[in-house]
Length: 110
Image (cartoon, rainbow, N blue to C red; front, side):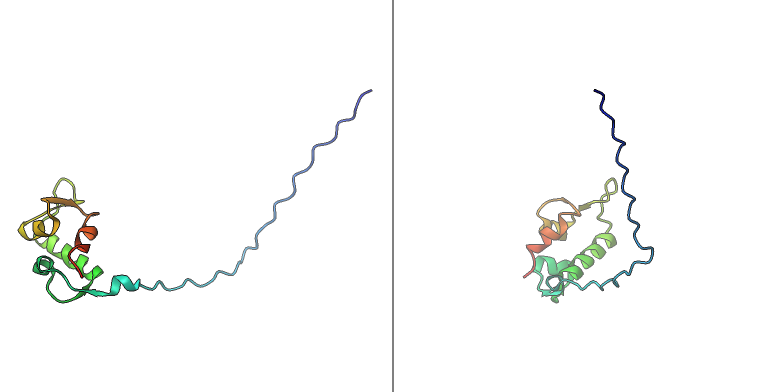
């Protein structure tokens, strides 16, 4: 006895998404309170950024101003920072990566 072959099942038509979908308005990003808290720099850090209490973000910004003003970025690899006498006291080594910067500064703020 021969058996009849069934026709393959047809694929269901893809549901189309409506062209005009309501998009929720984007929320304004609020800064993290931990970054905005004023921190007192250590004497070694105060020699570079000043002794007034500053938020962590401002400390990093002022540190970059100092680095660029004194031409301390490595010429071959701009991600590295060559320490002068003041920065060597902060970093503890002659050269650091810009990614290490925030971690090293964390030890010099209260």
